[in-house]
Figure (cartoon, rainbow, N blue to C red):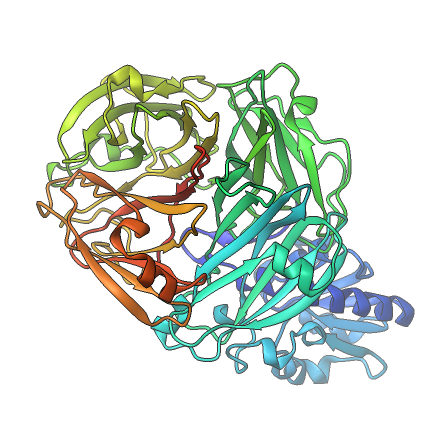
Length: 631
């Protein structure tokens, strides 16, 4: 496993990781490694515990012959395979060069200058700083706003193209002159092109289409990843987006491959889950995309049938920033739907995508982080009455005459031994019309429920904890939901986790808030627009753990590409109810034309927290669907 620290549920993201993993830092540290090797032996001063991650991400650096620390409690402990020495022993070190493993290191170097041997060179991580023009806050290099970065699966090949869409949500927090620094890697991890794009002032839309990129830079077909770095931002340090994959050879009525997936989680994890095993008529490909400037060794990444603890290593290496398509049936032959597959990634990748091919069509979806830090919480089976049904995982039930809606509970923490769960089904008006106890499911279960078995109407369902047969819970309840068009054969799937929704009372960090402490009782969701071939939609759900306002007071705010408001429309959704929202039904063609290709709808409510799924539909039964993002 790669020895890096990325994200901690209590402390948040590790900015040092982002700084060391940035592609420009990787290039600079590779050059520095070449210089250091020519200079002779190397010692390291590690004032902040950065050395292990630095050398794990950048093996081009020469091995350290000595390592010094200033925390007396760390003296003698192994770091980089050698015992850490006290800083006061530095005068006796015979190494040619001292690497101070810290950014903004001038004051550190000045503080230890009297300990340096007269002939010892000194270098610091400031050798790998990003250019000043890529920093939002130049005064403190490891400020989280300096590293608003993320990856996107990006392809323009084989008749399939990708389109990244989002909005300048940083403008709402006071950001000005936002720019995107972009680097496109091909399948081998080779940079194809690096460029920058200015973002429209205000809360304007952002659109990056692979076909446009390919024409602009006269590129051949590519299938790799796009690295995104947002500069001059405020508020959020996360780059959020929706990514459409579409068949660019469609006829005027559509009908080809179409899917949408959520933004990558920018922090590598030990494990990922909710990778479905293939059906007999499907091929499931895991896109293994190296997120770092160091190779993934053969055997470092493994696949396992969920719950079996018999992980099979991938027998090949993956070059830096490369993208490899792994047919899961070649690694786990005989494992088929509704079995689930767990990815043990060794912290080498951010949230992976997978691609399912069936009857000539493909669909893309993402895996989710499997938590290593969670344990069963004995309080959850006894949550106080004011929290009602507690943790809910809401998902839409699409019109049953045209779609099958299938849900599969998914283990999403390493220590989840069982899942005691129930399905509650609601019609669009918020009336509970059915329920089914699914049991105390073991980790390796193969339960997948077609909501038609419960007679579910168009509306939504919620997966909830149910302890009638015992079991444990940790609050990290997830599910994979699959939607199948009954006549066209198109399929879409999504996955997400449970939260406590719309209660006046709080429990730990629930109901979650986008900004500030809980409770989160407001909505700000992004819905991109479609076109004449593919209409965009949102399945909006008003989940409530306990009774809240009888109806929502929701505004649909249409923005143009510059962030200006074009029009607004009010809607109301019943508590525990849902609504399908189609921008082309809420707004005229003239208004949508004014919004333009980069326009979008902001779904806003200050009275309750809505949960939403979005997608596109064409005239031939082609559709996509994934959960929405907010800001």
